[in-house]
Length: 625
Image (cartoon, rainbow, N blue to C red):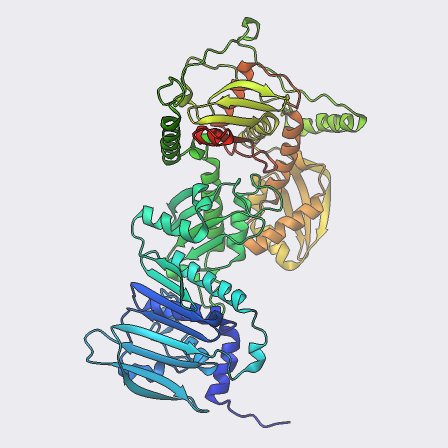
């Protein structure tokens, strides 16, 4: 067996580089964090060959003193923390003091810097097996420039794992985008092979910030985003979340920042997923740009060398805060939120331009919604309709029978409970209602309505399904969750940790109608279950609940299961296709949609309505061309 030997500084740094420097994008991330920590206002990133040939990052920050330059390229040397207390409350992006040393060990690195008031700038390089730092004078303005050339030139094995130039640059560009989203007060310039890619000026006002997000995430994102700004319990969450209708096939438009640091965290992902649970189509992913601000002492960033992961001191509080903030923001979105004033103004301006060209600008009632008297038969006035489910085949008959039996579990809730109100004042202008007034029904499936902006098309079954579902949830949770004692209690064999969690969370479980008691160190007994879930496999459900409790500090399994059953009942209890509605009933449905939370999507995440503006309709018929 070989003797124990101390590793050389270069070999130690190359081992550390295996964790810190994965690809050119990793180098850019570390260097950008250093520049941001230096208080810069502008950063220039110049890249050649996807970052493999050259990465040059220049900032106008504080700079580095001549005496500190040799330490800048050595391991575990930093100016950002001095004691354990500093480590437990890190307020900077970098703090480990190993990025520059790791990068310099696998590349040809040159660092030039000048501080405010210094007579001259200095350059430092490392050479030789022992990585001795050589310092020489240089011409440089205030700030720092790090020039990295020939990445992995001395570690060929690592270079073989790099992808094509385009792929590596895409990863590198994504890093710059994340940092630009994290620091609006700093300007960013990115060029590749001599061609400018991004030129972002500092964004101070809210409008400037929205423009930066739009330029990096795309204008469609901002056009479909809801602004959020919530503060409670020492936590602040702000940013933008996309409407459920603007979902993605993959999680490629999700940016979450904690005190300016972009992270990927299971707890955060679970909270966001839970908030979008019954408004997002299955298999789709939400899009968001969110910023969480909290006391640095309440979050541990010293989890991994890449600093992508964090641990919260009170994960349950953070999870609940994120979930409730997003859940409420999405619930408060009404149809009028989709039709923003700015969009309406731009559409009206575009429409007026087209009308002036075609000579139609003087036609009354074309640009604005005029009063439209709706002919409502007197026999239908004041009469509301009951949604009915008429089975067409034996299989549907079985479903209907099963739902009738299931309705008794809700303590009186039935599929035909939600009734659309029929009190509609048709004398109002369409401007008073975002969804306007109904004008026709198409193929017994869609409601056609018009408002001041154009045409509204509503899927009547999907819309009424959401209304029914929200009404059932409100009645169910408002009346209190009823529990059913078991004649024969069920015993579950669990781990000691699961039993401890069940014992600690007994009060919370009881609040949802589930009473679980500890019978032994590794055994639980279920004595009461929610009435609505008495037909469910409670053993497996309890295991799932305990698993969530351990992983995220809380569980929504019970609520999700109950909501799933109510969603099924709402689906089969809502108005069906080919049901002929009167104008009054269609208007009643539109008014209820405007008052119902999450009315933009049905229980399965499908959109319930869409709109075609006057300019869009004009384009369909080539008006003004």
